Image 1 (cartoon, rainbow, N blue to C red):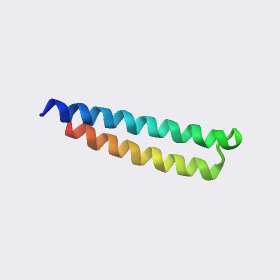
Image 2: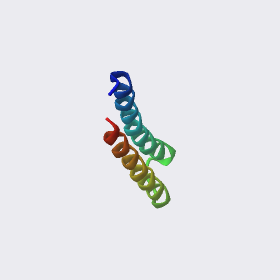
Image 3: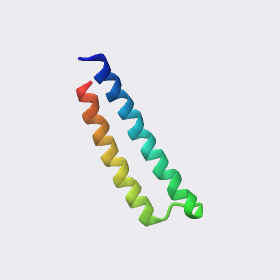
Length: 60
């Protein structure tokens, strides 16, 4: 595989992981806690992100 594409895939995987962390941080900034509604959204984001990362891993 083209090493530049492989590098871009690796970087996108890191971006996706950082996105999940940023979303959790954003949920806490509002009022210092993660309420039930936010937790459901964060869980959906986490699952979708993990699925995306697994797809990228297959391409590497």
